[in-house]
Length: 388
Image 1: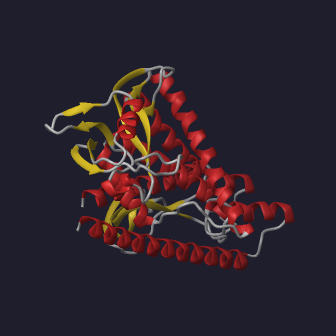
Image 2 (image 1 turned 60 degrees about the horizontal axis):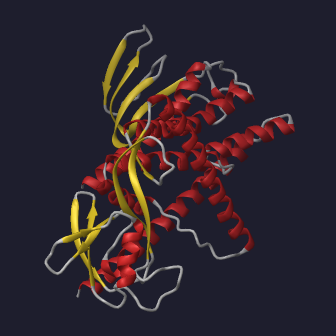
């Protein structure tokens, strides 16, 4: 239940901030926002201005006649929405309509949601750098370091580590000796030397996962690929690093740009492999997969949730700016085509394209969700078998 709550809060924040961007820029450019809602309908209540200028509260989904925006709170708590006058091309003669505005103004309104998601990521990461954010560290890292530890950044499937139940993010504290005392590891070399000295012998590792302390048992391999190691893990030394506020802001912005670059490259590689018919080696997750990963991140602590939310916000921004009908980028694409042609694209054709794009996106999401569920069932069966 806690994981579901965290997932809803994160998703709600990302969508709400995105829609808030559209709303603010639309209002600033004289476009009427008919409704701005927190959550999705059906409506619980709404606050609006009557024709005589008075504020009025209405309960339920009753039809409302207002000269200004209806601010609503709705039953489905997954972000929010904004209903903009003329967003589908109607009412072009009304100066308050989206459709009546210049191509540049319409593009700004559409791109505002993406900009807000980038801004949210930069703000969250800046806060993280100020209060202290987990980073890989070595002797060159500046800043205030605390809580140094050795963590897992990869567990290779089918290796002793995966059979032991070692997960990404786990902290390797030390080795549990025969008298149940823990011999602590201070460096990555300590861990590697211990594992190499115990090839073919059963070992017990003292592992910390969030607030849990685990005693995991396994046997390092004597025969293994050189790239995997005897246990099948990759390690990194991390610490909570904090910086002055002015440096935190710069680092937050810089990290957001770096994340955007990496995600764009990843999308480019994925698209190229699909076009050329190559096998797609990347793992793509839908809502179920993200929710499961949210649960894993939540166990590591608040600062990890902060980083994860920033990463998702950048992902959402980049996906939305892609030139795919039904997304913000697709709508901007039609504005560009309009400018190149010198006249608007047929409203009927554009609406049909957005409907098809939306249907394809929903189909893709359902397919990925089914795969996530199937993968979780397989993983659970494997865990049951290993536990017997």
